[in-house]
Length: 269
Ligand code: NAI
Image (cartoon, rainbow, N blue to C red; front, side, top):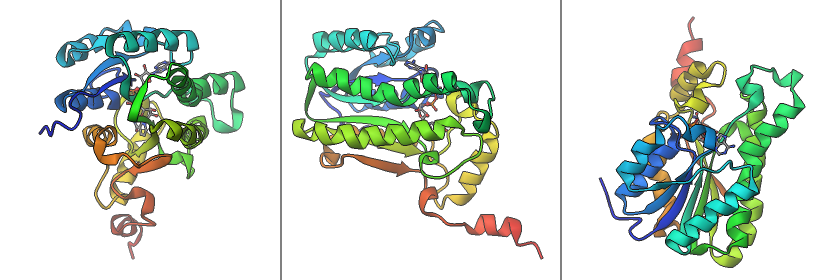
């Protein structure tokens, strides 16, 4: 169902890899709501070619950029300004940990891999915002969002250094969000339920995370499509004064101590 919430709005969406990607669903929903945008991903991800289908469906241009490269980001934002003039929204839906990918235990962390994952998953959010800031290319009442996970606040075994990356990411949203206030632009992170995607499924024991979160959330886990709906509201004019927040979109998981479903699993006299 479309409400025309993003009619006339222009943006950049980072991180759609395949149909499961949260960014993919966000792009589909933004298109349905009347937005125009550029799709961006790392050049290596573009080689798979899956993004072409989404670009066609949403009438979008694809521009590759490694989000850790300020040079790539400059080119991308120059192209966005040439195409749209100032823009209204940015989605940062990017994450990768080499330690997670290679199964390196947190207690035996490889620090070179840590730095790479930190740069991709957290610092890139600063780089994206700094590029937009220096080009002064956000319209007033624009909205910038990144995707986070509750492992930033609480420990989840095997989420590994991504926990630390998410804590850093959320801090960047608060700190840079303060300065963006001067330009009437809001910055937030959406802390999403575990979701079956390429990045999500890479975490060891992901099926357990998913089932436990489902049982612990009064409304059940939020799907990628539901996350996309929420992102649409955050890009719309209905949320103008929400900024510097980490917004839980998790069916109530974050505020539940224990659920009856979980109690029943242990209460077996
Ligand atoms: P995904 O694997 O579909 O998306 C991750 C994206 O990051 C991919 O498109 C990948 O190409 C991109 N990427 C990696 N390195 C990059 C680089 N150097 N430059 C530009 N892009 C790069 O997985 P998903 O789940 O859609 O992830 C999107 C965001 O949502 C991530 O920040 C993730 O941590 C977050 N998130 C995911 C949850 C889940 O359970 N799947 C839960 C909460 C948050």
